[in-house]
Amino acid sequence: MKRILIIMAMEAEARPVIDQLGLAALPANQQLQSGFPRFRGEFEGKEIIISLNGKSREYGVDRIGTEYAALNTQSAIIEFAPDLIINAGTCGAFSADAEIADIITTDQPVVYHDHRVPLKGFSEFATGHHPAIYRPEYFQGVVHKLGVVTTGNSLDMPVVDRQVIQQNRGMAKEMECASVAAVASLYEIDFFPIKSVTDHIDIELNNVDQFLDNLNLASIKLSETLIQVLTNIK
Ligand code: SAH
Image (cartoon, rainbow, N blue to C red; front, side, top):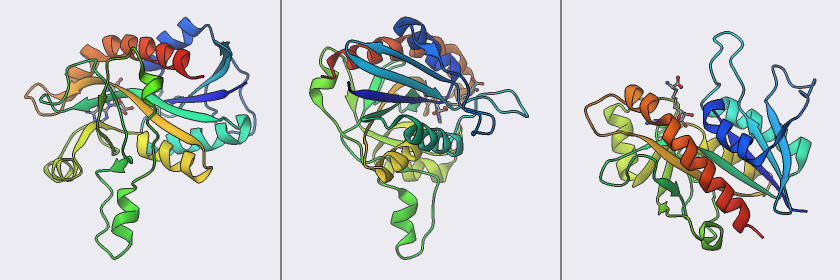
């Protein structure tokens, strides 16, 4: 049976799809310090594992960003040996590119926009360019956009990040995808992202307010999309 690992940063993003797929919580792995909440079940002849980044011990919030996404992905690969990895979550986008709750995936490598090292060789290393696969048949029946997914560790967008995002023709700005793609690539496992837009990164209203307003809507859209994509994967 094909085993699909879905890496998600925030519990609120994951809750609708965990409930709809009826996945069961797995016991915590005692070897992992402050573990990653994991849920498993079968859906349409596939084994599905959703693994969350977990909560910060100190601050109680979801451990968004690249460090825990990488730790989450590597430990889940070692434990479950998945055939395919999906990073599902929310993102910001320019208003000219996408509406709130639109679905974005990619047919291009995933990059970082806040990882600048202008030294020979290191510059390309820092940008990442981690591979992602695009199989149109997986997205049959899903209205989606194709664009560059660009990762950094901040929700805001200083001018320099914006310049890098525009140079790389970034469409989905988020905080985990490049690190998940990097780990998947290390283990030579097929990888692709599914992102739903929570905020427009180029309009006045700040992205924190937009994010909180739209998180629910985007998470429901994400759940519907994941279920369609998981159904399409043969
Ligand atoms: N304030 C929110 C946290 C949002 S952080 C809360 O308390 O719930 C942003 C999370 O959503 C990250 O996991 C990231 O991948 C994604 N995200 C959505 N919009 C983003 C944007 N404009 N920039 C960066 N990440 C974004």
